Image (cartoon, rainbow, N blue to C red; front, side, top):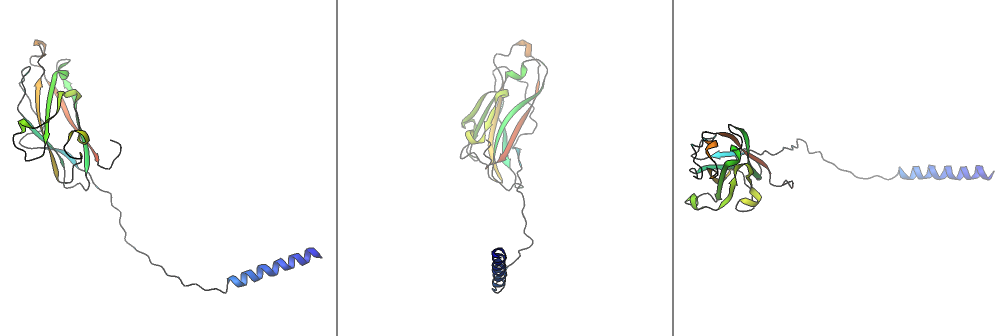
Length: 189
């Protein structure tokens, strides 16, 4: 009997609770915004030769003699939508005499565009072409970033190392100038 009385009281309580919940009304409102668009940005950074034809044709080189200057800029094209950072390296494709690649030196100068007399610009790299790594974060004036529609101006000079002996007469090497660029906000490098 006590069990039936307890079940009855619980049943009345549940029914009362359900009835009470149904007696309240609430005002509501909402809105849907349609046609939202999310678009990824673009990054188009490349070499921009000024008064120089790419690919470069260098020589005939003499040991220890620096070539003329070649202006090869880095350009963040107008097609880009973001600031970039970059690295410039070189990679050997082929050589006619073993070891010749290691005897090519490069001197790279950089400063702001419009600065007169590039021959007096600061040298940011001088050494073996095979070891060249120009990093915009450490080697370029400012914060190392390149904004959209901006050129970073570089002058390159090349030299056959003074130690090159008769073995290398007539030797040649084909190499790539390599530009790696990424969005400036990339924490990877």
